[in-house]
Length: 152
Image (cartoon, rainbow, N blue to C red; front, side, top):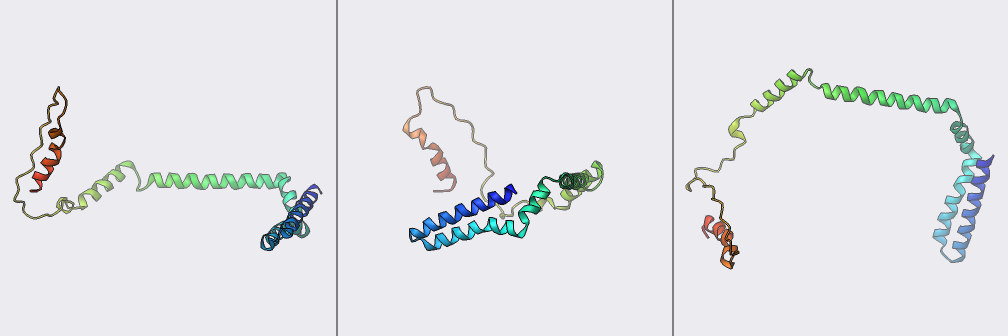
């Protein structure tokens, strides 16, 4: 009974807002507001509100919701265990992983750039920091080294 009263009040308020909007010559918006405000009364008249109220306060309905939750939890638990088990025991999973690694040829992952004419790159020694501070020529030494490396 209270749900029907609330729905009727909401619809009446919505129709009032629609009338004010139409008075301001915003007819498209007013029509849209009127359409939305008629929905609660339509739900009351079709019995949907009464059905929802009966289900919301029904202990049987809430037990059913609880059982659905438990069912979902059981499905997710079994799925998680199934994924974690995977190929069987831990030794089998490690063996399968090692077999997949060995299946790829070692040279397949190395890029083939042809024969190199330049000597192998030597690691650069670390530069000692000067106690007096860096001068302007020292700032560009990295850039010069890169340009020399590329032959520029």
